[in-house]
Image 1 (cartoon, each protein chain N blue to C red):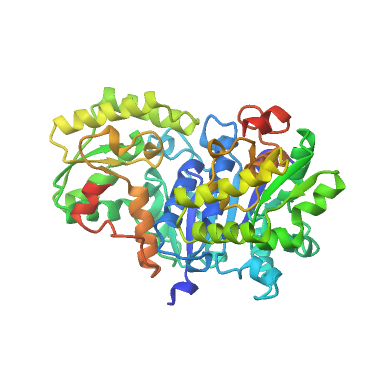
Image 2 (image 1 turned 180 degrees about the vertical axis):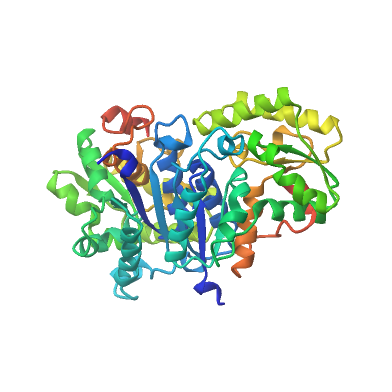
Length: 247
Length: 247
């Protein structure tokens, strides 16, 4: 299919700031001289989708029907692939993929493949308690012989608190420092890189605050969406190890 | 209608970076403690819509059918109001509004009303040649007794060149300085404020580069969309003159 016939569908709102961040990265990563060089994109941003972590922990409603409503909307709009810029939501992606013929990119799988290609064998994970509990990264990492290190439960509670603060609009430097502290502890345990495994994390934690590479799955997903749709990327892609170290 | 039943529709892609910027502002301006406090939003971002300025100058295809396709899509998705984060595209908004029952917010009218309420009587305009040529701001300003100053044709050519560079991904400091120079000339002619009258301009020109307030219609539109949908704004709204001076 010609790139101009592609429509990138974004199932968003989980949360909305992460959706805005993803779309900004998608636009920024496209090699374009003018508007018309960019892909058609349709975004369904439904922030009322029940909390994914709560559902995984058995404390809240199943978000699948809400997410499926979004998928149907993206199908109707002509989406030729779907990206879901939310790590925790990937727990529900297999169920959604079973109900649609439109391919859903798997952000977590893409990220693990990138780390593996870059020669990383031990990686730290900062993510929601839901993402950690579900072993979303661990599953794909195991298949590649990659070891995933997560914070102990006391630190994990602080990480989750930080994520909820960012969702509440408080991406303060104090939250960033707390996340950086958790990352530093993972580094002392041998992590060669850290995954910003919740789409809110890059809003408070930046590469400058860490001494090991910070991998942003949102950026990895943007690159994958463009590549799969046949749109050229701006500058060198993140396929190489050097690019991972650049991130 | 209850805010939770509202769906903000965004007719975007003109250009895509401006759409991402608008959505980022919409999310950032919402007073929210958690994802579920944000409005449902659907974005149709079609960067293949023919260039608006070229059409106005009689040099290119009429974008109305493309824009109408987007409106239909937003209607199908349940949009309860539509925002168009592109100044020049507002030349085609009356034709679109005539064909849909969904109210389309008028960014230019909202901006002029804000300036008037803030006591501004003479305002500079940095915009595409299409926006200037169509008198998009002048029409609404005249009705309020507001005088709009535009650059002379030599400077306007430089402004248009700068806008096209930003669309091409080059929001460099050199482009910003060129725009700031054009704004300073309008100030010497008596402008009390300057409108960043093309959604790409705030990507290169910031308030710090000017000595008079820089009004960002994208932010004004985000506030209007939230207000009309019944969502509370973060901090003081831009309804007051002091807020204009704050911008």
